[in-house]
Length: 344
Image 1 (cartoon, rainbow, N blue to C red):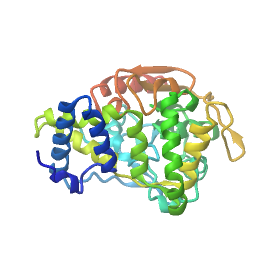
Image 2: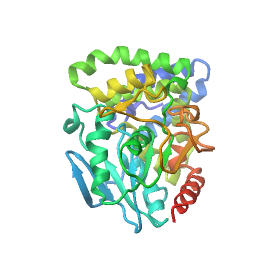
Image 3: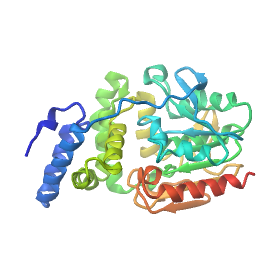
């Protein structure tokens, strides 16, 4: 088969690790490996739209800003992860979570963390204290917060420290000691290998972050490219696969203090889950004084449901990204709307 994708600018990062995973899977399932390589070629050669959705900026703190995604009524801030760009919450018109919440009667503000260089000295707690809290204050009245993945962890921390109306988290880890032993071992090995380079660069590059995600579920990493090879090239599903994979391979590096806090204080010592995470001298807890709902995904390998914060939870039949942009999004939107209507 053709291997032109291997040098293509849209090949996955880090490509050598991906090909290693394909080889490992191919040892027991050669057909799956062949289909994954075919999917890789399709992905790399796919046509991409140059159109971008632009939204006005309403507030800025250093490089981070809030962008107005429309809607009326009480404000709601969408807090994405520090890892990968924020537009997963507004991927396209059909699956946009931002647009869906705007239709629920909320004014939606999507946080964009901006360039890593402008927040290079901040850990995860520093991002909460010095960026998220001032942006919350800029809204003028206590907003609702909805945080995705690590953004949910940070939104929950912020709800301990600032007046907010209510809180929703999506696939947000809090009890890091509940990750499997295999996940802990794999991440520790990746951090041990990456740490010297990260120290020298002052950041943890996206390539190494991507490798850490792949290590949590290598079989799924290969299988998803095989699935692309089976889709109609012009289908919405194929187009969305390309957009999602581009999103997963984009994004700013993680500032070194944030990477160290994630790998050592969170995964290494579980400061949040053990009640020892403090921000600005104040300990933050998974129990907050405002209504909170934690939405989890049954097939999530990145933030397994068992790692979710304590409190009211609802599990969706999806994976980490599928809960936001896949078929389960209909149920996700319904649960969020039900919860937000309780405030009316």
